[in-house]
Image (tube, rainbow, N blue to C red):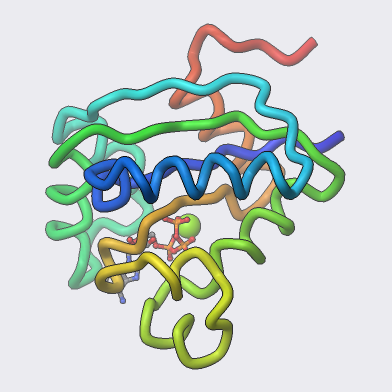
Length: 141
Ligand code: ATP
Ligand code: MG
C-alpha cells in the first residue's frame, strides 16, 4: 500500500461539519488511517513547509493562512493513495475545481485559491518528506 499525507487546512477545521464530512469521505474511499493528529503551525513551520513557493505572489498569504488556526493531518494508506487523494481534492484553484470537477473537495468546500480546504502530497518523495515533517515520530520499516 502507498502512503500519503493529507491535511485538512484551517479554513475547513473552523467548520466541524466539514471536518466530519471529510473524515467520512476518507473512510468511504477505503483509506486506512495510519495516524492522525490535530496541530497548529507557528509561522516558521509554515514558511519551512512551503519554502518551494517562496517568492511567489501568494507565498505570504499562504504562510499566514496555514499558521492561522488548527489543522488536522492524516497519514493515509491505500493503493495509489497519492493520486487517489489528489483526485478527490480536485484542482488547486477553487474556481477551476467548481467548473471542471464539481464533485471534488475543493469545489465543494474551498473558499479561495489559498483557502482551498485540503492538502495532499504530490509524489512519493514529497509524501515521505511531508510525513516526516508532520509526524517526526513515525518511521516506516
Ligand atoms: P497543496 O500542496 O496544498 O496540496 P497543490 O499541490 O494543489 O496544493 P501547490 O502548487 O503545491 O498546490 O500550492 C500550495 C498551496 O498554495 C495551494 O494549495 C494553495 O493553498 C496555495 N496556492 C497555490 N497557487 C495559488 C494561487 N495561484 N493563488 C493563491 N494561492 C495559491
Ligand atoms: Mg503541492
